[in-house]
Image (cartoon, rainbow, N blue to C red):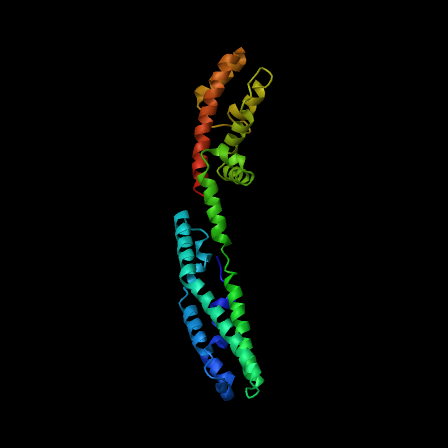
Length: 261
């Protein structure tokens, strides 16, 4: 969340002191306008805002609990102080518009006083518009991301979401575990046969292979033996054990990935 610069420095034009100076002595002929009171109330409302609460620059690398806590604080501060400020600004606009209209009808009051009231109304409107521009995208995007991650039970769930799938694949690359994900995805529902057994062995099973899996010697030898003997029933059981081992490895990677939310 960020705050437009216009909101961080209270404009002099919206102070009672400036109004008293600009309206001139003849404006007093119109009687009590309420402009001064509304400006004092507005300035007080602005001073009550804890603007730092809306600064997200220090939250970029914070933990989820910190960001969620900051979001609650920001939401509470918006309701506590920004909403009253908006009402105060609307009050200034209503009072000065009414005053400008009254001044305009009174020929004894100079046009400069009327313009002063109109300028205040415009300045208040600019601030009012700016309050709608307080940027909440950082928090909203984070909350949406947390919701997505909360629904993930395994790496398979992540792969169902195009954006999360790309993120998880990139995370696997960072952790040097792409071979685990690749193997599980490519071997799902695929039966090892005489035709593809060597390709699987040369790619994933053999020591030093391009996408060597982190397997025990017993599993590697069992696979090779089944392949050499053409024991495809035994091979199915070995492959199941291999997938179980790789599933454990990918789970560790997935758990660390979830922590990046």
